[in-house]
Image (cartoon, rainbow over all chains, first blue to last red; front, top):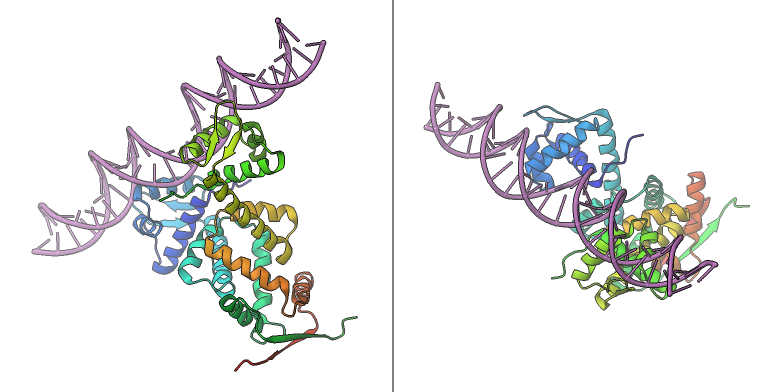
Length: 161
Length: 161
DNA sequence: ACTATTTGTTAGGCTTATTTAACAAATAGG
DNA sequence: CCTATTTGTTAAATAAGCCTAACAAATAGT
């Protein structure tokens, strides 16, 4: 019966994981800088997350994620990365704007959507014959010109009763 | 210098527009029912939106959108519809879950992402030769089986230096 | 027309997440 | 070592959005 976490708290967990990954350790100050909030806000958030057994934080000490906290952080990070990939690689949105959107969307999508989008990207990226997907280039051309490429795609089915 | 609206307030505008579209008029009660909040919350929201000149609401009267309010409502509704389409028609997610996600994502995407996704769906839906897009079927098969269809797609470029 | 029910409003409270300001602890430079 | 700066903590205040409870207005039933 783990209550659903607010997107704000998800952000804190994600930030802590990211800082730990980069620096080995995470301090209040790092979180404060990364999220753009005051250290007092970080403290309040850490108390909340502590009560939910998602972080460990002793006075004046480093901040650590519990296994449960790590799990959530990984989950969010996964959504983040997936969405960023979709936005940049498929929709061809520039990094900055894509990042902004991914940071908001990551709190909005369900597991199902995460799963389907994962498969969609897999499907698109591998192409049908292991070739680079031509139609992605074709889409970029469409974005630029508004017109479909002068290209024909023929489908030939084998063994398809 | 119009301040950015909270997703909550966006929901209220969207709801009012939807109710008006359906019933001709919108009352506090309708909004309350649609959004699943108490009428006192609706009242508070209406005061907020009134102060921003997005709705008109006289005591005990109907609720109306100003032109500015209508514009925002249309915008949100557009995002909603687009996302719902993407989730159901492309990612093949069932209506209920798709609706839930769309209702959250609609507040998270930028205009750029909206624009790109619009074009992406256009591109996908029309197919390359005006045919029904074969690869969408192919993706559904991939979702079911985890395997690419036994099919080859050959690309032949014309006039492409 | 009169009462009963539904609908709308207001006041006051709760929660979440933020801030500022004052203070405490830790660290760094001489 | 001692002071100066940085970092962390706490308390009190603010803002958004919701709720309940009490009341007011409108509508419906007889």
